[in-house]
Image 1: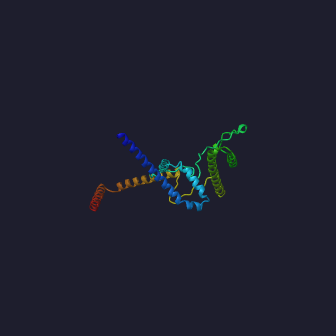
Image 2: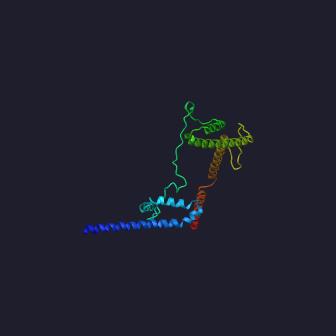
Image 3: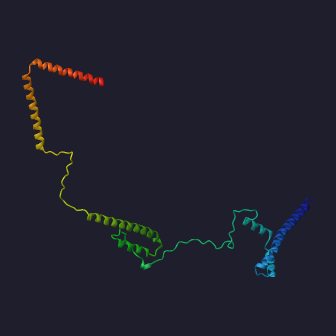
Length: 249
């Protein structure tokens, strides 16, 4: 009894699946029929040829294939992260970038000497032209760096030549002489020699001797009491001056 029920249930499931598959096919057929007039009007395709191709494709257009296509394209279930990678969708296939192959020169292979600093501008320009004619892709980077270096060097040479021209023009307006110019004496300064210093010192000593001689003669001509009185007066004047200064402070 249970075996018969299981068989009946299996047949029912198979019929339901067939009905569901038929609904999918009918839905797709209805959509194609609705778009058929527009297709017939826009593209020159005969109806019988379209129907013939449709029936040929219907044998392989199973619900399983349709679902798999929808799932792969991200249509059902909806997945915007998936993209179509078919060659019919893209304009052109993406080609891999290949590195250019260096041609073999054989016996015509050039031997390069070590690069030295060009002594003149003409040599630098000729060498830059020579580098531009090298037909080897591996030298592209070297040529670019060399051109920048030569351009910078040419610019520096032009600037230095201009500076030299300016200095030469300034040199024409200046006279060069080995003679020593006379020193201009400032009005507030006095220049003396050794003889004048000795003469001034002797004059100062002579004045000191005269003052001492005058003091001796003053002592001889005045008495002791007068000298004591004069000294006391001088001390009194000194004390009064000190008191006056103290009051000011």
